[in-house]
Image 1: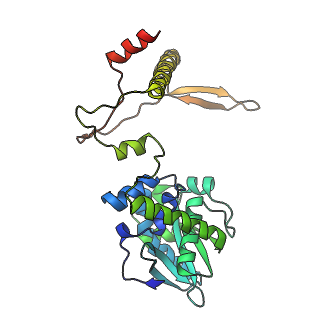
Image 2 (image 1 turned 90 degrees about the vertical axis):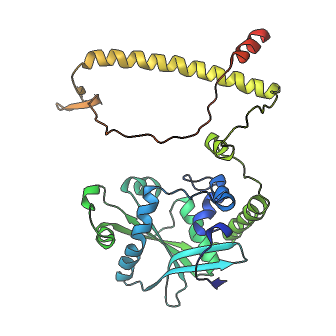
Image 3 (image 1 turned 180 degrees about the vertical axis):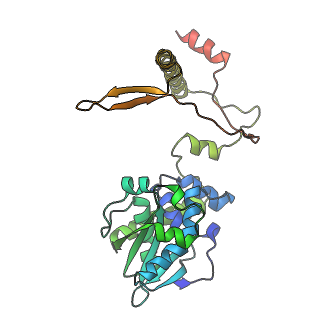
Length: 314
């Protein structure tokens, strides 16, 4: 292992990549990572990720103020393909990896366990173990900064002021060399088979397939075999059922709207209470105008030939 001045994200597998590459990140698929490495596709850049990058140094400063001296931003590399940009290293010998995560109150309550345990989301655990193995650290600590529930509380504040308003929870992650070895082994396969040999990883969903095959080739077709025809039949049946459900939903909403008229909702007296509580609202919502930029997309549509084929088979 050696420290390097900077991490070349396209030519190595980093800590923010590994959980997704192994299929453990719900925000990002293995194909997303593959496209970033081979095609230079832009990494997924959500508001949550941007706010995390903005707040990380300030959260580390608050962590240091709690009596945890730390060296910030430690880039690491090994074996020519593994890398990591550790948020901080701390401990007497600077041998404890520190990883910062900023999370909303809703996400924290849904996905994170009690502070002082290792009950963190799988993607975070994978990243912490990757860094600990890469740095040969004593252990890792994940610092979760929980943002205030009301956005107005942090509107216009500096990063340090926002960090001061966050709840800070620390999760120690012990080394688990067996799991670390499994992570490295699977990551090696992803890098050397999928990336180096330019073999796309298994697609996880329709969106993955759309990303891989973004455009159709004019005049190019594939002959449908029996399995493909069965899939089309199943799809047509589902679309018909969905149409029936939509029609029923529209009719029910119409009947409810006739009850509401210009009222904002329906209220009832809950059992054991004299207070009226809303069970449904139908309020007026205003949207600002906007302009939609040109886009390209692919859409399934049955042709007249499909109708003739299925008619002939009946």
